[in-house]
Image (tube, rainbow, N blue to C red; front, top):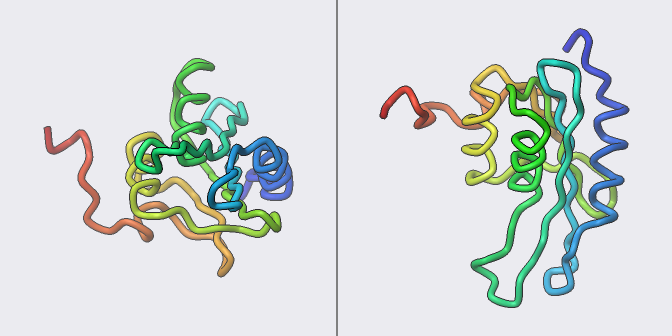
Length: 128
């Protein structure tokens, strides 16, 4: 975890969480990611009355990553409405694998881990 300022990442994630649109679940989520070039990108969940169209915070993170020039995620902090670390769901783990790889660091309530540990045997572009 050397060189990763987890406190700053979590602060950016909390700021993003406060901008979430979660009128249905009342469960705002924010996420921030450190990109290999030093940029910090972020996202928040955006719900929809048609629940299947809801966008997770990690979708917003990946959109911000691509919008600001792409690259690879090095570390990610995702937070719940209390600003506490929230482990990404399976769909989000797949997004993080695609844009950060198995070595991307993830902050969880239990400490730091990697996407590879959260999503063993992941399916990626190498299979296409």
